[in-house]
Image (cartoon, rainbow, N blue to C red; front, side):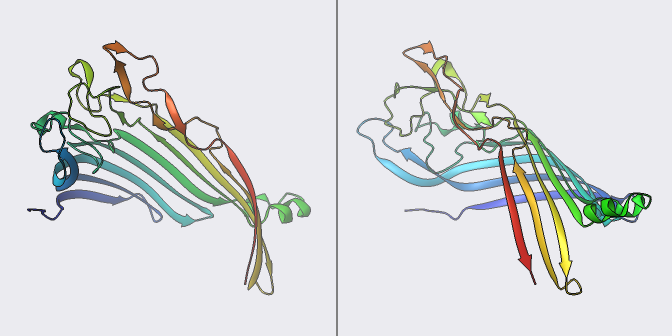
Length: 265
């Protein structure tokens, strides 16, 4: 039995330019193809089913990334990263069956991993105590050695398949792969992903700064945005559109806040 090795072809090109002694901006374009990716297929194309794990799937990615980076200087460092691209394949994982086991071309469409756009902004800075020389001593001492590290991410929705609730084409695919009304694979999108995490920490130094105590607070999903992890992919049942399609089945964690304390020597 022929079970070829998975491999990829990748072509990238980019430019980077300095915007000063501490800051750079870069742009990179990528083109990637994947071959011999795994999938499961009913090779009999009918019932009774004969399932076969094979490496016949393929993928393609085309995208661009723009990055603005400032290294730590004057108590400030940040990173802005923007990605835009398109990912297509005819099977995103080994558990995905084709709509028609005899014609795999019908499944060439957006990948599960496709995300058209994504923006991430992160930073690390300490409060500018040196600029507050006129402030009272107790205030300067209280704010000294406090660092703040936020990270904000916003991204387009992920593709959602549109499935019939039953195996109407009698392919015995599990999970179900039948799509109603001639819809292509992964035709719609889940809601956008939005998240903000932030950490604030104060450091106390002892013994010539060889021993230090850090106390702080961390917040995850500070905006308490409801980010779906899984949505219902069942688009129709018995020829009727389901209102539950695209509804959240599982979401990521709601806002979480935790205190921290650590001692390092």
